[in-house]
Length: 315
Image (cartoon, rainbow, N blue to C red; front, side, top):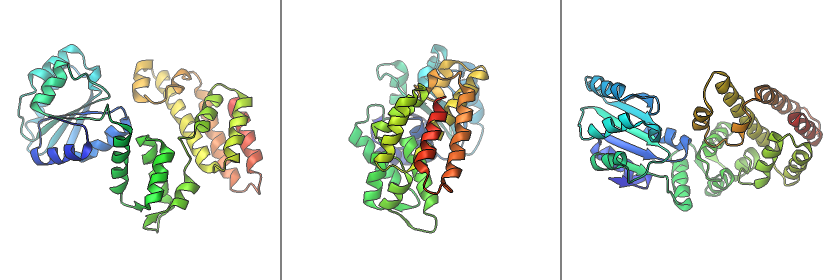
């Protein structure tokens, strides 16, 4: 059985407890959030590294437990043929207290693997989600959070995060902490604390920084200030980019392949070309942290400090 919307999918698994589930989504952050709907302890594998023997051993050993268990196999599209065959052959097995949950960014519906899970289990396919359907899902997520938002505040946050679930989570967490002691997040809070990630100038600034283009970096940086963007969320967004770049460099240094790095950070395509620049990313994080401290005692010198930082980051 296949669903293309979250609400009926979770209502179905709550009432039927299917043995197999497949979630298809191109957003890793959304996959992590959806996992919270499944109860019980779980053991996790990457499909690319999981062997067919290990998979069957896990099915047999987990079935011995009397409490709810979850066998999670991520990135199913990377499964090799022997593992795919074992999953297909065992799809009809009903193992007490065990749910087999598979996640993937994409999996063709005409494959035997997809058809086996569709026949014996349930599929939530968000890979072809329309923009308006995606926005409805993000709105529902905000409504389920412990602190409510004004309607206009929620709409503004959705616009500023441009449909990126990971960014939405991060910005909501900042707003939640910022408004401790209050029951409601207001429009002013969103305007003060978040940055408009849908604004093309923000990403042009990041591209110019990565290309070490000082002139363009200064131009885009000035434009953002002239348009009224707050420096603090801008600094945090840049720091997140440098932190991700540094993590990717460390992964490469540890011997991980470019394919493994790209799978871990699928949205950071520009950063994937910068994995030799670990020192630059580390230095950038230090400079951004220093600027955030200095701005609190800047005495009206925000613009000067901002431009000095941008020049340093391009060097």
